[in-house]
Image 1 (cartoon, rainbow, N blue to C red):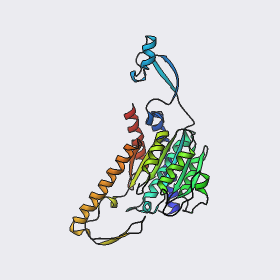
Image 2 (image 1 turned 120 degrees about the horizontal axis):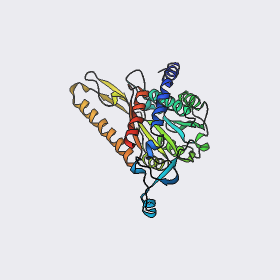
Image 3 (image 1 turned 60 degrees about the vertical axis):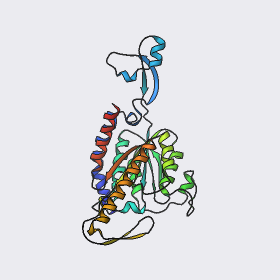
Length: 307
């Protein structure tokens, strides 16, 4: 998708941001991921009709009457967006590529966060970190989207400014892992971190688990239908966007189509299992999805699960 068309889609999409913000509010944003507790405030007497899950049983046993924990909302929560700009994200069998969907979703969430006066920041990366915007309020959503959507031009010294290590060919983690590590170093207070990627990389599991230990993380796997099923006819060559490896496909006989589908099904299951093991929230977006509708459904589902 061309840059101007992407900008126009983003401008139309942000009209849905108030619905996303409302979905967050219905679940008290942070409690959507960590349960009802935000920051502990005090103990108070239990009132008839309150949720029994709020009862502090230790205090209740000590005092001989029911007490509940009171929490205070943390309005300084930050939204931090990680957007994968690697070669595999340029794939797309329809109008939008995977990176288009990632950028449109980032614009939507950024605008929704700004309606709640939340600081918004982000990192874009391919095989290394190629740009970053520190969390800020105000017109943060527009600034972050503009930075993330910009033509990929490596920003010298970004890794060093984020406390990272300059990349050395053949050594160290790839871009996805580096971006996750950089976000973990940069964010000093608990934040909502949303990672948009197809997760076709290595070395990200341990950094993701560490990030999930200190922040609320949504790991969004962006997919395209050609990754899941080959067309029934024709023969063509494929080039791995990440490695440059080549493969000739002749799916008419059916065997390669079955093997292809089985491979990507196993890979998707592996990624979902890794998210669960890292204790982060997983989500999937297809290049044909409406990001606004999918995120409204996602946050409402989280609210129902927590509530």
